[in-house]
Length: 535
Image (cartoon, rainbow, N blue to C red; front, side, top):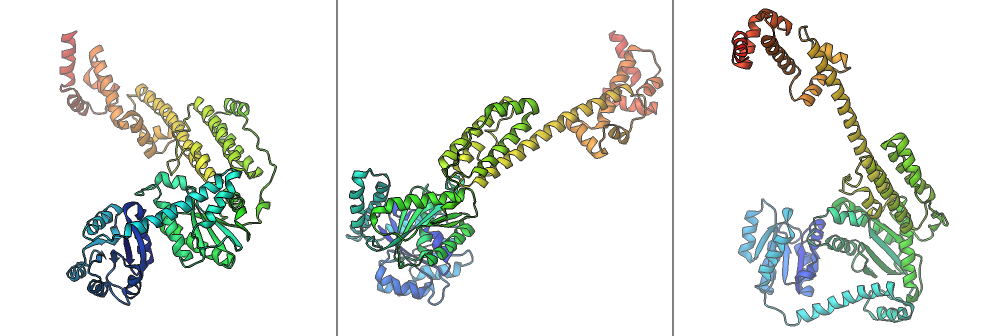
C-alpha cells in the first residue's frame, strides 16, 4: 500500500483530493496532509510518504524548497505538482528539481490522477514490510465495522461474545469509562446516489468520513464507525464536551452543504455507562432521528426530545371508495385534492414509526395512481426535479416536506398540462368557428381585428393560435379558400372573370388574375377552357 501526502494551503483542495476515491481500494492511503512546505517537512520524517502531491506557491516554505530538500534526503520519494493553468514556468522549474509529473488541480479527475499515481508508483522500489503492515491496518478497520454490524443483528446468545470481541479491538476510546454516542446521517442519501456522478458507489460516504475526521480532529478521543449505508457513529468518552461536539457538527454540516450540496442530521445520546447497552443506545439514537422526518429544519437532536412523538396514534388506511366517488363526481382534480387531504392527515397524526408511515403512504400513492390512470393520467411517469416519481419519493425521501414538495411539483405539472389541453381544445373550437365564418363570407372584406374579437382573442394571440392549429397563417388560409372557390366557379358557372373575382373577395380583377396564375400556372380564362375541354 503506497502512502500519499497532500500539501496545499487550501483546505478544500486537500479535502477534495482525499475524497476523490476510496484510496485503499486502489493500493493507496492518505498518510498525511500539510498546509505549507514547512509543515510538510516537519511531518515527512515521521510519515515517510512514497508520493507527495504538492502545490508550489505556499508560505512559509514553498513547493520548490520542499521538493529540493526532500529529494536530497529521500531520493526514492516521488513528487506530483498540483498546478494551475498559468503555472507552466513554475511547473517546468519543479520538474527540473525532480518532480515526476503534474496535474491541473482545478479540473482534476479521479481517473486522471489514478493513472499518474500508478505510473509514478511503478518507479518506486517496494518496501517489503509495507504490504503486511497495511494489511493489518485494513483488517483491523474491516473487523471493527464487521463487529458493529454483528452487534446490531446478533441474537442474545451471541451478543455478549460480540461485545467482548469489540472490547478487545484497539480503539481510541474506552467503554470502561462513561461515553456518549453521536449519530450522524446523510440526508436523502438514496436520492443523492440516484443523481450522483461518483467514481464509486461509496464515494460520498467516504468523503463525509474524511470531513468528520478533519472537522472533529484526528487527535480527539473518539472512535468513528461507518454504519449502514449513510450513517456514522461517533463515540466519545464523557470527558469530551457534548456541547463542543455539537458545535463541530454544525461546522461539519455547513461545509458539507456549501461545498458538496449534502445535508446532514445528527442526534446526541445521554451519557452512558458500560458497553453492554451499546446496541440499545444506537437504536434509541436512530429512533430519535425520526423526528427529523416531520421537520427538516431539525438537524441536531438531543436525547430527551422524544416527547415530540405522539405515541399511540393509529394511521387510517386510505379510503379507495371515497377516492373513486370523488373522481366520478368531480373529475381528475378531485384526485389531486384527495391526495392533499391524505398527506395533511398524516402530518396531523405525526406518528413516530416511519416504516408504518411509509407503508401507508405507498399504499395511498398506488391507489391514487391506479384511479388517476383510469382517467387517463399516468402519475408513475411524471417525475420531479430529481427524476423521482411520487411512489419512489414516499419510500426514499427522508423528510415529509420533501415528499410533499414532490407531490406539489407533480401537481403543478399536471395542472399545467391539463390547462394546455383545455386551451388546445378551446383553440380548436375557436379556429373551427373562424374557418366556417371565412368560408361563408368569402365575398366580404375580412379583418383580423374583427375576427379576433369575435372569439375573445387579441390579434397576436389569434394569429399565433390559428397558425399553430392549421399550419398556415390566417391570410394564407383565406387566399387558399378564395382560390378554391374561384376554381369551383370557373368550372361550374359562366360568370365573367370580374364577377368571379368579386364573388371570392378580390377587389381588383387584374390582381385576381395575377394571383390565380401564380397559384395554378394558368390565367382564369385558360383554366376555364382547360376544364371545359376535359369535361
